Amino acid sequence: MADSHLVHVVDDDVDVRKSLGFLLATADFAVRLHESATAFLATATISLDGCIVTDVRMPGIDGIEFLRQLRTRGHAIPVIVMTGHADVALAVQAMKEGAADFIEKPFDDEVLIDAIRSALGNRNQADATHPQSVEIRGRLAALSERERQVLDGLVSGLPNKAIAYDLGISPRTVEIHRANVMSKMAASSLSHLVRMALVVESER
Image (cartoon, rainbow, N blue to C red; front, side):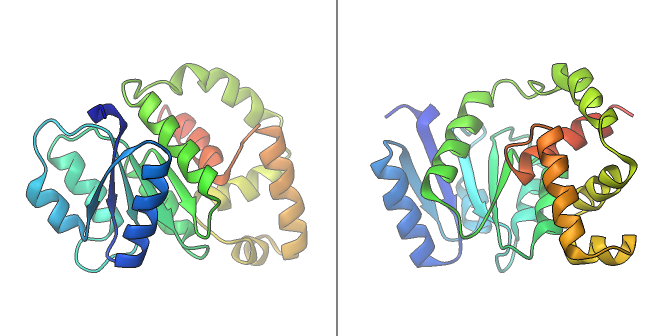
């Protein structure tokens, strides 16, 4: 198996490591399991290949610090961060720290496999999304003022209830605006939406 199809699973939960290892092996990926970010970094070579799947919440070096240390050491390997449903703020922070994608648990197996294939396919195109910035700006311009406020809340990592409280509207209304934002922005997932917003934000 070529190193380009290698997936490093970094998670402190042994059951999660084993189940992900089995899932990815059956999808024809070469898999290496690591019990912690510390263990991974201790054995990481200069020329890391493939991609990393890691939990955002881990004892010791958590997912956010893991991303920072990889970047500090000059590793450009794509990282997919797994987050809990209540960890949207951490997920957004991970994207800002350079994560290729984040996936909310529990997730469908195919969602993870598709995210890995996408990360592996784009790893040599770090700026692949930037040519779309004009198109993204056009989609942003189509949002109503309220939809833009909801988007800003999402990109800040706020849950629907917090956005609703800040804007003085009901959580159900936030859900409707959020669905409209996803549709108008042509976002396939929350991570896709955040990534588009960050592309535009980085050019300001």
